[in-house]
Image (tube, rainbow, N blue to C red; front, side):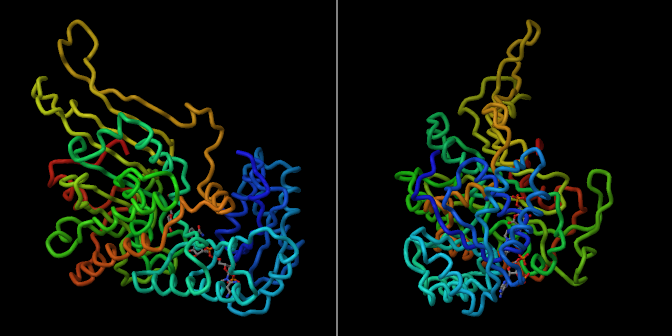
Length: 491
Ligand SMILES: NC(=O)C1=CN([C@@H]2O[C@H](COP(=O)(O)OP(=O)(O)OC[C@H]3O[C@@H](n4cnc5c(N)ncnc54)[C@H](OP(=O)(O)O)[C@@H]3O)[C@@H](O)[C@H]2O)C=CC1
Ligand SMILES: O=C1O[C@H](COP(=O)(O)O)[C@@H](O)[C@H](O)[C@H]1O
């Protein structure tokens, strides 16, 4: 890709001293510079409360890049070029003082401003209002909003309303970092560039879909945020529903942001409500207790730093979701995600149906169907399980299941797969909204998630306990085995 003058911008990084900025965003920007994807005129203005000057911020950036970028990838010439782009403004984001400095700082040139809000959502409204007051809310300026966008539909609407008073939808880039993962974008290529899959992608050929996002980490010192959220709001409402949409959506008219987002929205609207009997049968919530991971003892959720012993927040969710449309009628989507699982695995399993007439040995039925395993992380790639004849004169027509394997790093000789934030920052700078979530998507996702949370709260049932280092409560196994199916064991 070449970087032309249209890609130059003034990136205003609100919350520049926070964890996300220090750990992920500065690093992603450095890698973009290293890949020659930052225009020579692009400037980065850090904004936070700490009283620092430009030099102090440059030092913070260097210190964090030295910490988070492997030494072999930290090139001194690029590092110097990168920090030369940095400047800093100290401000309280809720006060207008400081915004005029920002406006003056960037007034001298005609580059668009990208305001990245790596801050709590409680200040999004103030930042937007203040940017507007100093004349920075016009097109082509854009804003980037970090998650979480509210804790339910109404709080999300409140945030979106405040932002919308000052910025138009085409200026707003809502982050779901899963959409920036290379392998997640690859779902679009897989489905719409391969007739082999495209032609089979419906209820005639697919038996069911599984989406697993298992994390090894616990709450990592984020108790005060996480306990108000839980795995449903933290992971299902955004990341898993976005994955489900990319798997289930109809082919978009083209690759434009709104064509893709229109199709994703239709899926969210077609999700069958989860209430009453359907909710109790088709959902499991869990909370981890002390256990072991990789042979090491780890604490339970209620023993984590800052824990409230009464908490009934879920750290694991399994769901059987159904999509009420022609393509997916009768095809369950099993979703599961949890913290403190045995390993970090994000994968999507497409289990194809068997052929209509079966002619092989009765004990080999389970081999005679295809399974597509899409590994999002780690070890990004795909495996298609296919049935072949077992080799050898003595085998007769015995079947054997074997993998057709595509490992992205090996196949494409990539030394590193770019982090999601690199892709997302680049797309914002290019002004492409395809990998960002539109307001109506966020709100339909909340509608579906809210009724599940409401149902759980009404039932008064506490989450089921599971030991850290296991795949979740046993009832999550029952949820799928009741249908005569099982979670993919290769996870
Ligand atoms: N950290 C992560 O890995 C992820 C974070 N996010 C989201 O990104 C956002 C930022 O997260 P994170 O970096 O972890 O949070 P931090 O609390 O570490 O950083 C927030 C930053 O915003 C600043 N800030 C907050 N209020 C004000 C204010 N009124 N005036 C000036 N500065 C202010 C803080 O300054 P001060 O320190 O002075 O308060 C700090 O620099 C959150 O919405 C979070 O949910 C999303 C995904 C992952
Ligand atoms: O948004 C979030 O995502 C992370 C998991 O992201 P991944 O890229 O490491 O899979 C999760 O741990 C965190 O709780 C959540 O807020």
